[in-house]
Length: 573
Image (cartoon, rainbow, N blue to C red; front, top):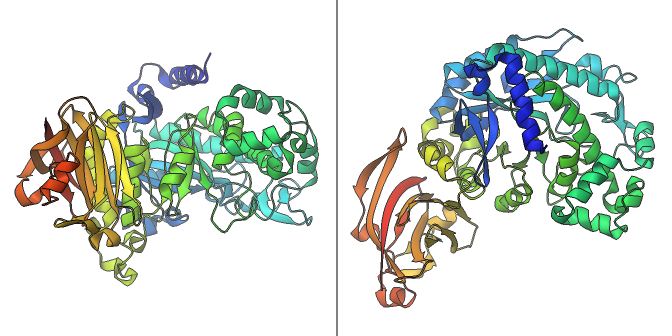
C-alpha cells in the first residue's frame, strides 16, 4: 500500500471514530492532488491561504488581540497563524489551560478567519524557551543538548524519551481539545509543529546519549529510504554518500563522512522526534502538519551558525525518511533571492507553503510568484499585527499607527489574490498558470503558458524601449499569468508590461483583439474600462517591433499595486 493510500485509510478510520458520514468528518481540512499541484481542501473545496503570522507572543494576550482581529480582516487575510505556547497550555504537568485556545478561536471566527496554530513545544527558533518551567527546571528528567565544550544549552535533547513523551502528551491534549471544539466548525486548517528546530552553537548534540547514538550504525529505515529514492536525492547529500563509497551500513561518520554526518544525524533525530509528536496529534485531529525552516544565511559558515538538523534543502531527504507523517517542510524566507529558495523546497513531492516571509511590496511580489509559479498552498508574512512591518520600504514607520490598513501593499495584493483565488485553484497543477518576478536590473523574462510565450518586462519609456523608467527601480515588477482559453488570458501584475508570441504553428504575430481592466466579484468577472490606444501601445517604432514579430502593443500595469486585466488575442502575419 502506498503512503498516500495509507494516509487515506487513516483518515477514513478517524472519520469512523468521529462519526462516519457526518459533514464534519467528510470536510475536515486535508491535502489533495490537483494535476501536478497539491492543494489544501477546506470545507470540501480547494483553499488558498492568504495568511499572516502574529508575532510570537501576540496571541498570549486577548486584550492585545482585541484591536488586531478586525484589522486582519480589513487587510483581506483569510487565515491567521498564531502561536500556542506549551508553557501557557500546560503550566503544571497534566493540567491544561484551554481558555486561550478557545478565545483565539472565538476571535478568529468573529472575523471569519481560519486558523493555523503554531505549536511552540520543545523548540522555538532552535531554543526550548517556550517549554514549561517544570520542564526547564528539571534537567535530570528532561535533558538538554550539549556543546563540544561540555556545556549544556537551552535546547531539549532529541535523544530523550522523556522529552518526547512530555511534548507528545501536551500536544495530544491540545489536538484532542481542538477536535472537541472545532470538528464541526473547521476553523483550524493546519498545524505547524515546533518552530525552526535545530542545534545552535555546534554542528550536533554532543551529550553522552547523543555521542553513543552517533557511534552506532545508521538506522536501517534511513538507509532503505535513501536507496529507494537514490535517483532523486539532493545533490549535496548524494555527494556526501558517494564520497564515502555509497555504504549501505556503518556509523554516521563512515556512511556520510565528516562534512555532513553531524547535520544528517541531527536531521534524522529531529525528524523522528517531531514525527512522533505529529502522530500523537493526528490520532486526535488529523489536519495537515508542516514544519518551518530557518534557512541558511549568507554569513553562516556551517551547521550550528544556523540550526543544525533543521529541514534545510540538503537534508530534506532525511526528513522524508524520518518524518513520513509530516505533510510539508516549509521555508521561512526573508532573503532577497526568494525564487531560488522556493525552488529548492518545492521538489521531490514536497508541497510549497511559505509560513514566514516579508509583508511589504516585495512580499506581495513573493506571494504572487510562489502561488502562480510554484502552486503554493499559500503565503504568510510574519508580524502581521505590526503595521510598520507591512509598509513599503520607503514609508515612515512612525506613521504606522495612523495608516489605513486597506491601503497597505499586502492588503491590495491580498485583495487581488482573493478575487483570483477560484481561478488560481482551478488552474494550479495544469500548466496553464505561471508567474514572474523581475530581479533588480532584470528587464524581462518569458514563460510559456497556454499557446503563447508571455514576456513580462519592466515598465519602459514608450518612445525608447531600451530605457527602463525610474519606477522599475522603485517598485517590484511582477505578474501572474493564467491561460483561461486558447486565445484568452487573465493577468494580474504591477509595474510591468506584457507582450505575447505564439508558440504553436500558424501566423507568427499576436494582436490584441480585446483588453479589459476589471475585477472579480464572487468568482464572476466584472469588466471595467475597455483598454485601447495609448493604454496598450508600448512601442511606437513599429518597424522595429515588426522585425521581431511583435505588434508594438501589449498590456501595461501601473506600479501602484497589482491590478487585473483580461485579454483576448488573435494572430496575423
